[in-house]
Image (cartoon, rainbow, N blue to C red; front, side):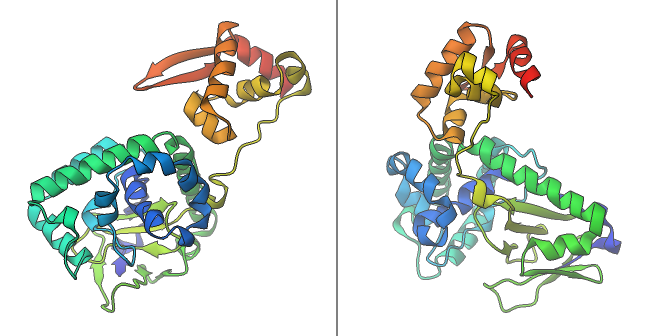
Length: 320
């Protein structure tokens, strides 16, 4: 796939983050976990939750060579894309597109969950993906998003310091840039596809669930390149919160670490994942810290977010 940048104008290139792309691409780890060893800790942590999902439908949305249909990985618009907006876009996809891409995904015949009438298939797929997001992605998404957004910041810095060519060369081995043309080698196609980005731009999307790079396998799809994000290897490592010795002496190591970590809002579930401890243990410490006025809390949807209070800031601040 060759994308011709309009006049080599870098304003035509933008970065975006897609929650839905990550959700759908992660289905590859179900089929072949051995190819994604970095995500084994997450697969173990979500094993029980995944056993309660519509696994038959979810696994039907990928195939033996780990392809996924393009309509489930729409081009995101910004680094702040919301999962609800992307699912709404999928719900509005025309039946002809869904039918064509599912047939291409399973050229030997659709598996049972995809043989129902298309409106029912789409509804079941959306329900399955939503449940998958709620149980296995939402608790971890702040951590995932931080890695993806850090990659975007890094790529912007490379463009500023060394130019577009260096940035594209660093995306993946399959991506190259010369004479205003960005080329992506597609292992799934022997055709040489080419299209201009005029009026649409080229969107670069970092992902945690690929080690290389990919693009839509149709010149009719909006110009987009998905590539492996930097920092994926650190994603599931437990954070070590280093607190000042004096703070530890007053509060204990666990509570001092939590107070240090809560410079930005976080839920007890997110903190437990980041620190690799149980949610119940974190909740006990958070309640104590809140009761003595070192934390504030506020409900955000189905979660309660905690943040250091002014008193907590004053206690932590002088120790930095």
